Image (cartoon, one colour):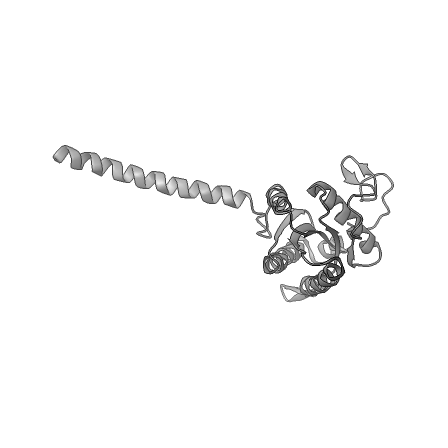
Length: 221
């Protein structure tokens, strides 16, 4: 009996230690999938979840979002202020996306992506999407207050609707429409239902026209 008690006294702390370590590892793994600044999914995790969403076969809308004149925010107010804008944008986008049964992620820098439910007839989908996007832009463009200073926020949103295309093609198409509306000063642009693939060429895997690629227009990304 005493030997059994001794064995238990040794095993219980070890078991507890393993449980704590396992919980710690699970939390670390989960944290690694989240962008630390915005708490949104990282690009890799977002793409995996978005692909699962598309695989369900229901109508979806893929969004690519970009902050307008973000470099100006960093240059004027400092990078800490820029981080505050990114954090607020991530929180707002995450809440909006969750309300529309979707998934959101940060692709990198000041670029974000989301996928949401877009079911309905061909006539109603565009109208419903437009209303949703107006609501999203209204949320995202609320000023951010940082250290007593009010920072204006402006966004551009491109949207591609699911047409049995791969996620990469939908993201590229949404990115192209985001870029077009960005050149016009911001807002949103929805790709026509018949447009299921990107039209612009790529340079090193990036859309032609992006800053840093040959032939870039100079529009701040």
